[in-house]
Length: 274
Image (cartoon, rainbow, N blue to C red):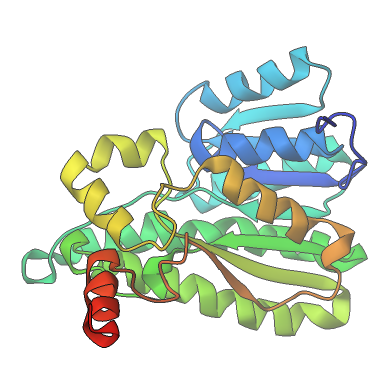
């Protein structure tokens, strides 16, 4: 069986910045990008965490670095972008993976919570993309943003009005950036994951809510960081050179429709006369 390290390197020489690489989807992406030949600079708000995951990759011979950054601080985000571009000698891919969260039923939502969610889910995408834009427009490049299936489908029990609004804005932002960036050779796409198992979601979601969410997926298992990273590699690679302005749902079929095995069997029996 061919391993990733033996396979053709789809991102050979790509200079990549990825946010939120301490764990979960960001750490998975950082590893897969590096295995495909990219040189990666990551970051995370958790002190020392991004540096630790990058060090593990360097110990295996990959080129990866990680920094402590609070992306809600626009000056800190800009400094990280500029330092990353200097370290890599340019920029080919910006992957906006990081996000905070805040869930609450709308009847109990405060303005402070609303603004918090906008700050940790939407503003941070602007804080990185704005300073990176001039570098990407210089020679062409790729932006990958992370939204959510919540941008496409309401999920009542989660109390996700603010979350859905922020992620919906990211989807729209990606389309408009794709239009503006096209003449400079910049492609912009968005990934909208469904329920993905990660340290953050596993800590925030109890077994009952986890089971409820999975019942709303056609493929009844949680997604993994690797599932999302495989799509991100494709969007970063030259093989997706005709793909831009898209929002791609990778959600186990959650936004495709409903699955109810018991009801399906009942209807089959009803119309078969059994």
